[in-house]
Length: 305
Image (cartoon, rainbow, N blue to C red; front, side, top):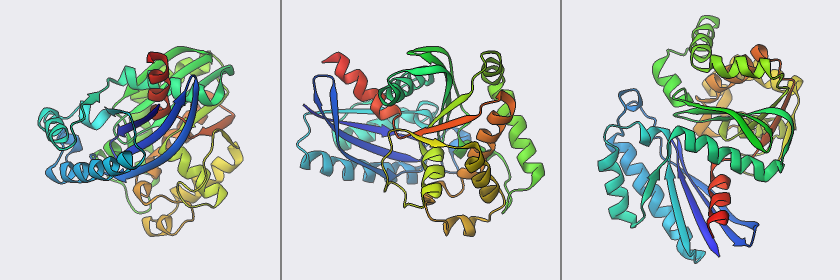
């Protein structure tokens, strides 16, 4: 059966088309459309008219691709920006009227569970206590895992679109601004940091945007050009990219090979969060994976068939 998963995130609307045969998944197509639900209205918990128009255009583009692949089943999920928007009902009605698809707005807890299931498809199981980190535009999901089970999970409204809307960030960012953002992250994620230290977590599994961009910069490839199930990012390489990005201007980042234009602003606070996690927990290994929420939805669809 050919299926499509649409993940309506805070920054992008992502499409994944796959063929399911028993427990086997064959990825046929992946693409994304820039919707920027996290524009200047995100701190007011509103989806702007402009963001709504971008989203409708994104769904039209995805619908055409889905038609070309003769997909039999479509599942659409929406995350942080939609679930926290005061005007989400009107927004979802517009999408439904345009596409005929029902959009399921998932909770932060469900989002973390789906991310775990997606990452598990890539790893099969975790050899030791590990932390999965999905850095989003609206929320961050942090999931402490052991082998094939979740020990702890949290979803917090600390995504990068919210950070750049809330905090003044100079070009390049100043040490004082870094310190304020670190304090904010520490306040929201202190329980996860504490549990990682207590459980001697040494491996960070990074999925979604920021980690993809780090890997693309290291590999000197264009965004989306290289598909990865898992890829090791050494701490030395991460620190090198951290220094490069933190000290860069927006214009310099735009010129970097591997930089996704969608993340040119978001990558700076994302690097601060990752660096803070390394310092506070003692993690000494980073593994990037392309597998995350969409693959988790696929995993759930397999179990339901």
